Length: 102
Image (cartoon, rainbow, N blue to C red):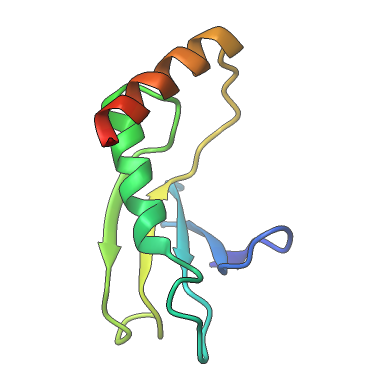
């Protein structure tokens, strides 16, 4: 398990299993947190919702609410490579998404 070292307020790790499959684990930081900060639950739900409209997001595998596994709640997603999407296509898909969640 290797922690990404830039740009994350929530600790984010690359995990590679024995077969070479890569996943990303994103968790809340440890310690006392403001109730509305570090809402990885919201991130997880948004990623799942975006996936339903074929928006280019990683596969979303699982969310764990328990502190017993990694010390804080976390979610697991596919390690996502770089994928280019045309700006017009991205805007169209986001509009569809926003209409679904309102």
